Image (cartoon, one colour):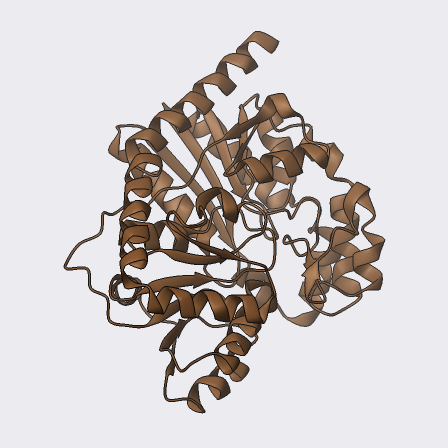
Length: 391
C-alpha cells in the first residue's frame, strides 16, 4: 500500500511530530511505500511583517501553492490513501480539496481539538473552557484567548467557522481515547467515521531501570500543563526531590522556583536520549495537566520504564492511568490533593513498585507496535473500501 502522510509542524516540536515519525517508520518497516508531505510554521515566522499579513489575509484559508503541490504529488505517486495529521497553519485546508478532487481517501488524525477550539485545548484563564462549542468562536476573539491578541484569533475563527466546507471531505477520523471520541461526536463529527487507535513508541526501553528518589515532570511549561499547580504543591509539601524537563512561556517562573530550592532541578530542553535516561531513573512521573489531553507520549514512556504516573483526573487521562493500579489520580488544579499524593508515593515504596510493574504490563499489552499496525491497517483498508463503495 502507498500512503501519503501530510503534516504541518508547529514552531515547537511536540507529541504530534513523534506520532507522525513513529507511524511512518512502522509502515515503511512493514514494506509499505510512504510519501511524506511536510511543512513548518517556521516559514510564516520568518516572513517580513507585510508578507505575514498577506499570508493571513490571502492564504490562511486556502494556499494555492499547497493545493498545486499536493495535486502534483498525487498524480505522480498515485497513493492509495492520504493520512493527514495537521494542516495548521502553513499547509491550510486546501489539501482536503486537492485530495477530494483527485478521489484520494482521507484519514484525519485528531491530535487535539483545533477544529473546534482556537487554542486546541479547550482551556482558558486557568480552567477548562468550552465557550466556542457550536461555532461560537467570537468568544475566543473577544477574550483574546489565542496569543493574547485580537486579530490573529479573528482570522483563525473565520477559518474554523467555515470548517464544514472542508471537514466534509474527510472519510475517517482517528482518535486516541474514548473520551476524545465522545467529545468529537458531541461537537458534531459522525460516529460512524470515528476509529479508536492509541499511540505507541518506536523503540523499546533499554538499560537498567533504577529508582533514584526523585519525581519527574516532563512537558511544555505552559499554564494548561499544570506546572504552576505542581510548583505550589512542592511549596507546601515536604522537601521531596523533583526534576523538571521542558521549556515554554513559564520558563522564567520555573527557573526561579528551581533556583530557590535545593530539592528541585530544572533541566530545560534536553535531547531525547537524555530524557529517557531521566525517566528511567525516576521514582514516578507527575502529569498534572489541566486541559483535555488525548494520548500523551510521556505516559507510554513512563509505563515502558515501569514508572507509575501521578496524573490529574481529567479527560482521557483516567482511561490510561488507573487509580491505584498503574498510578494515582488527583483532582486537577487541587494543590493540597496533589501534595498529599506526592507524599504518599514517596513514602509507600512497595505500592509504588507494584504500580510500576502494572504500568509496564499495561504498556506491553496495549501500546505495542504490532497491535498498532493492525489497527492502522484496518482503518486504512476500511476507509479505502468505503470510498470504493461510494463511487
